[in-house]
Amino acid sequence: MLKQRDIIFHSLHPEPNPARSAALLLNEVDGIQHVEAPTDTRLLVHYDLRHITLAEIESALARAGFHLDNALLIKLKRALHYYTEETERANLGCPACQDKTTREIFIKHYRNRAHGCRDPRPSHWRNYL
Image 1 (cartoon, rainbow, N blue to C red):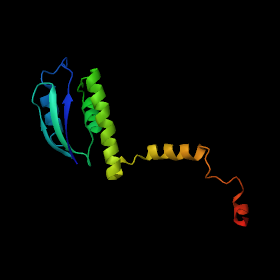
Image 2 (tube, one colour; image 1 turned 90 degrees about the horizontal axis):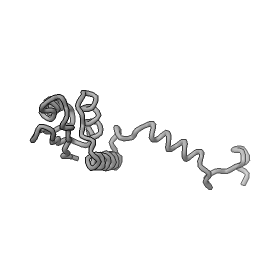
Image 3 (cartoon, helix red, strand yellow; image 1 turned 135 degrees about the vertical axis):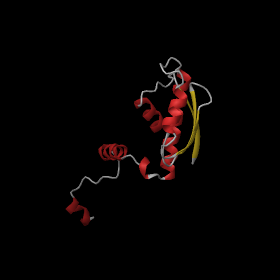
Image 4 (cartoon, one colour; image 1 turned 30 degrees about the vertical axis):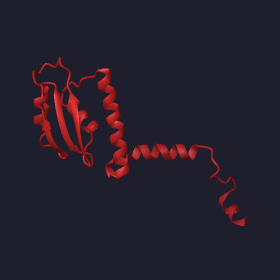
């Protein structure tokens, strides 16, 4: 599954061309097919969803010191992309998407929830009926 996304950087970044610097940084990352910087603050990324997600790319850029634009519309688009990519990866059955902690939380919630799948009798009494 190939994806194409825009990453927008904050215009008040101390570096004059953060998109070009980020493109050089992401060029060798596994799963990223193509990176280009059409403007100083806009980065166009083509990547394979089975290997990497937009959330991973943006968190790596933030850890590297890049300032992403946090305007309301961009934050909404970002959240939508994160959600859809996570859902697509789960539907594809990617082993990397099966987050162990998420599964454990779901299992704990299911076990503690009251539902009709429980038999209150001790296990040795269940065989008699």
